[in-house]
Image (cartoon, rainbow, N blue to C red):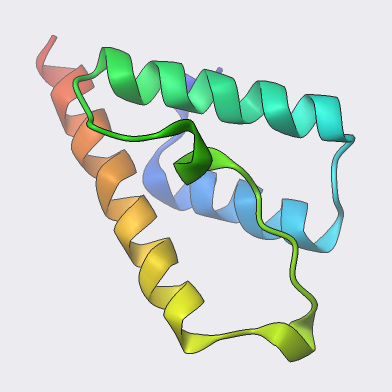
Amino acid sequence: MLALLDARQLQEMYAFARLEPLDEPLEVMLAQIAHAVARTAGADVDLKDFKVKRTTLSEEDPADEVEAQMFLSRVARAAALNEKL
């Protein structure tokens, strides 16, 4: 299922998870699947890149937006590599 998601859909999934947290085991499993898909596609990423970070709205940091954009860029590159296969 995760392989069928585009970068925008994955971003929405992570945004939703920040508002409505999933069970911890499910979050870990989704991170592991996303990591495996990205690595299979040739992306040089770590598992921690896919773990959901919990913050409250008052804790929002502009650096988080930069990190999110970098993450989406890695996902987009992995998706592009996957399409070439």
